[in-house]
Image (cartoon, rainbow, N blue to C red):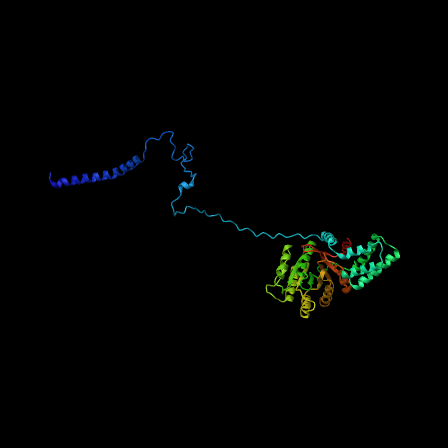
Length: 407
């Protein structure tokens, strides 16, 4: 056999050995690694390496009772943030509206508050007329008390003369009888026959229009807000017009008052805008929306400022191009006394005041201003305010007022 015959046989053997080695070596290595991890048969009492909870039963799940012993390598972020399910946006909740007190409840409460206030008028008169002997000195003190209460000179003299004559003729001396006579005469002075109703009815297919005027600081904007509550309590559909464009916060203050009871406000976004334009627009919107009442808040102005008073007249004239001004309410601070009477005269000449709103009537000895204003202007007090509460405004009633004064 030659060399050439032996070489193919050797080559076949080598290839065969290579194939067998390639199959057996991995199997050998795998068996060797298994032998290295093998520690011998596990005793029945040995714990299961998968039972880390110590329950004696293998569940196939590692429970990490103490995660600190399995801290991840430094630098690894192990937090898993799952995508949140989309949340539908919440519908905007409607603002909660306040419910104003009914008018009847206001009258009772205001009368009680006035009776408890420090009114020197009623208490002083009763103390004087309850004396055992009512002589000339007593009548002089009664007269002084009435004058201090700002009833006015003419009204004071009339009241004192009438009471003196009645006491003399009837010979009455008991406090009860004198008090009854005093009540009768005071009621006459306050005059219950005056028409104190507010003109707030729609007419000719248009809303009633109310203008609120007065000097600086008497509380016009607050009065408009409180009056809106009175009207809402009477089921009126109301719209407010912020024509006080000179005081920066006036429009927002008025809008806040209105929003509390669901009443919209027409206002300008421009500081110092023409108040007549704002008033005109408010009435226009009121006509379009068919509301019952449009109330216009005006800027405070001193009665001796001719230019400002003329402007107030302009506001009224502009409104009347499309609707009648049914009420012009003059807001007066009861504590100003005779100065309030001077204010009333000037405003009445410019805008034809139809009613008085008397604020801060509690805690003052100036309650007689009610009589003085009505007698001088022939204009009734229609509303009174006895406090800073939202519902501390009520229609004025002559007999209730006198009864509260005399308690």
